[in-house]
Length: 196
Image (cartoon, rainbow, N blue to C red; front, top):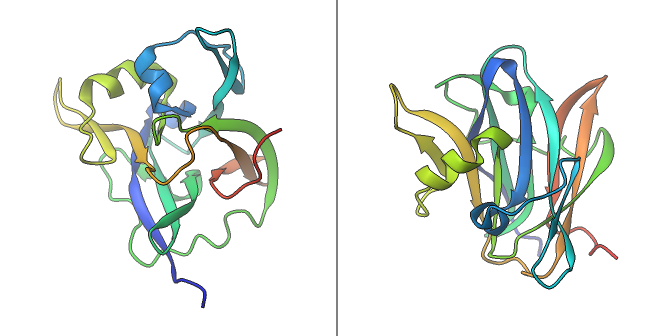
């Protein structure tokens, strides 16, 4: 019997001015503050000389300054996919769509492989690349939404996707999905075939 598929809102990340150079990256490599190649595929060199495809960077554009929600699609309690959906963006401080959300359209449109992300410590960060340090400074490991409190009102700067059921040594494929010429969604396929 197939388990019921559900969608959980993990949080949102800021797209200041309506654009974000979004990093989807292994949280452990953000903590390590490693140098990496500034390209679509983030490549980190480990102390033993190995090269790890630790994440991807992609430009996300929305109509105005706001936030992009990140959802987990679940089979029972096991995460199947993570989806950053620019079509469901909200104004800064707005309330993202949650509840009975159908993400079945994600993965049905024109997709393009972006690269791979690892989850060495069981977690992945979604955030504007300029906000990595802020995310590290403001993280509350009990919740997935990373919120900055330093100046003025709170604002949501990143999403910490804690996925303890993942295989630490795998690279997971990441896809971009377009509607027309616009990037609509970025999908991390947690059931995708291992990279070679």
